[in-house]
Image 1 (cartoon, helix red, strand yellow):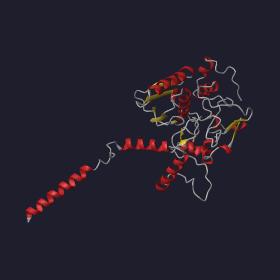
Image 2 (image 1 turned 90 degrees about the horizontal axis):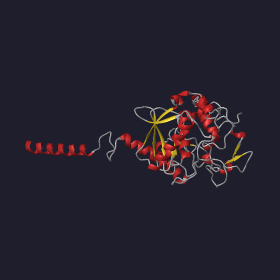
Image 3 (image 1 turned 135 degrees about the horizontal axis):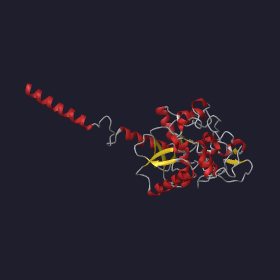
Image 4 (image 1 turned 30 degrees about the vertical axis):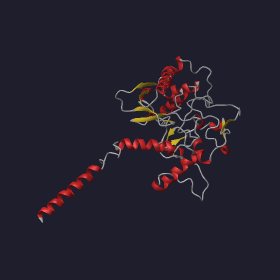
Length: 334
C-alpha cells in the first residue's frame, strides 16, 4: 500500500512541476517579450487604432472614424477609461482626449495641457514656465533603428535648419537622461508639447519624411502649439464649424493668454505650425478661413516661416541670433 501511495505522490509532483514550467514568468508576456515591451507595443497599437482618418497632416490613416468609434465604445464598456460620446440619448459631441491620446492630430495630450483646455489655466503655463523648456536650447535625440534611411536623412536636414537659423542645438544623445526618442508608429506623426523629462517619444511614421513636417513636430517638443490655437486668432480667422465633424471640434480649441504667448509677433498664416484650410473637414470644404483674404491658402510644410524663427529665438532668449541673422527686418509686431 505504501508503495502505491509513493508512486501516486511522485506522479502528482511531476504533473504539477510540468504545469508550473509551462506558464510564462510573471514578468514575461506569452511570446517571450517582457511586460514592459508588451505594454509599449500595446500602447502604440491602441493609439494608432484611436486616430480618425482626418487630421492636420493631410493624408489618410487606414482606419475609418467609424471603426475607431466602435473600437473605443467596446473598450469603454470594459475599462470605463474614456468619456462616452456615443450614448443614444445624446447628440454626438466633441470630447477632450485623455492624457496619452492625440490632440489636434499630432500632439500627445498630458494632464496639465488637458486641464488648460478644460479651462483650468492654473496647472500649466507652457511659454512662461521654463520647466517645459530645454535648458540652454540643448536637445539630445536618439534615432530608432526602425526609421527608414530616407526619414533619417530628412530628419538631419530639419535639424540642420534649427542649428543654422536658431540657437537650438539638436545633438545625438550620449548619456543624457532627458532626450527625444525618434521612432516610427505606423502612419502617425506626433509629439508632446515642451520638455517632459526622461525618454520623450516623437513618432515619424510612414509619410512623415517631409522636412516641414519634422520641423513642425520638433517645434512642438520645444514648447509650441499650433498657430490657429493662439488666443488672438479670432481677429484673423474664422472656424467653419458646419464643415467639421462635431466630435472633432476639440481640435480647434483656442488657448488662453496664460498658456500661449505670441512673443511679439502678429498672426502668421505662413507658419509651419498652422493647420491647412480643410483640416478635419467632414465634406472637403474649408474648416478655417482667413477673414481678410477668404481665398488664401495656408498650412505649408516646407519649413520655417520668418516669424517661426523669431518666436523660437525669442522663447529661448537668443537675441543675438535675431540680430545676427537680421530676422527682425520687415517683421511687423502688435
